[in-house]
Length: 217
Image (cartoon, rainbow, N blue to C red; front, side, top):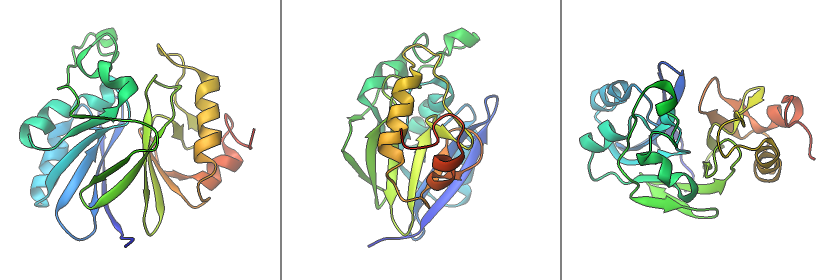
């Protein structure tokens, strides 16, 4: 039965990356999506609220979206770490996850589960559909929740008025734009997109107004 979401956005410095704590409005089980460089803020919140993290989801493998995996996994060792199959090598390789480029050495635990297009992640009382939308990274996925309102946890695919960078290794503007148009534009206009950076937006707004991918073709 459709249910309302409990959702908290936690912004991590230095890249102003959005981490999301998500669960059913009733109950204390939650997932953390894209824990960034300040996982202590996430842990403080879940402990203050009496929440139990039962899953760690990564939309992709860039450092600012996986930097908190280790601390979350240490705090909640039974919570599976889930990422798209195409970005799995980035978790444990600082060159691939781009942290080495910033003089850092971000190394995450390996994934417990790899997901592909069309799979469903059933966790914390939620059903999250997996869509593969590469172009920002080779194996980028987004997680779609169809409840009282359709919601997309989109990582660095689609932003308010922009899209993810495509100049990183494995990036492609054409691939990213095609994925957005073929897989996101078909969702209801009122679908809320919670991106990896910046404010939330809607599919309807971006389909009409986004300067990079507006329109149907």
